[in-house]
Length: 247
Ligand SMILES: C[S@@+](CC[C@H](N)C(=O)[O-])C[C@H]1O[C@@H](n2cnc3c(N)ncnc32)[C@H](O)[C@@H]1O
Image (tube, rainbow, N blue to C red; front, side, top):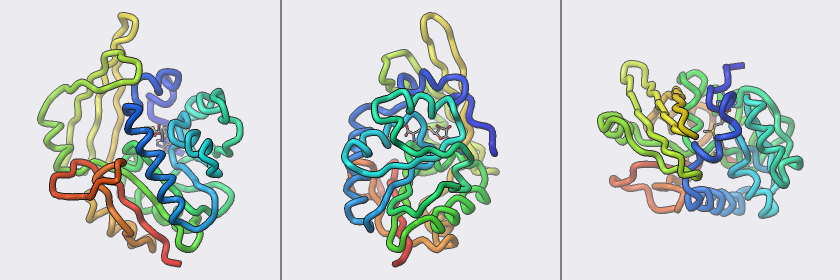
């Protein structure tokens, strides 16, 4: 099993304060996933990298049957402590193995988490294992930054990040084109203490994602320019890609 990222081990109790997107993004994510689930076959949903349940819990509150996988016990403990957190079946392990009992109508991975698999091999493995766990006609949904936008952001130096708590957080991205990797270095000031957290990623273009998904037997059904469901255009800086296992 890969080591859990530092933020998920040491800072799980601060994750919701420092690392979650604004509430409007969370609400839009839940709404679009719920809408997509209503176009999929009847069946449960599985979140890869379920974390503290930011997305899974509101989806469960909408009546969806939710399951999850995460490597970090500390994150899952946060989920368990929340209302409804005891009702979600969570496997502890590497989500790229998609090792969880059952077949699913929708498998999803959000908040840029797919790119936390830091090799092409791991990303293809994940897509292949997910395809094997989908019901016929089931959906695999991921969100991701566009490489071009990451490169611009990396050139911009340290940037402020909007946080739920209002604690000052800045992020510095560094891109390594030779390996298609990038790192995000977060600096958090909390009660006068300064914390540094590094997260490593491997980026892929939409075209490479489509090719990796095709290798796994999945085909692109639709691509949005963000969780609000806007069209994907040349001005998009983010995408939500919906793959389908042919029925
Ligand atoms: C950025 S957080 C997102 C959490 C949640 N999906 C959300 O949107 O709030 C990523 C989560 O994925 C988990 N994670 C990262 N890489 C993993 C891996 N290879 N296997 C299992 N979990 C992993 C981390 O422990 C963390 O809980």
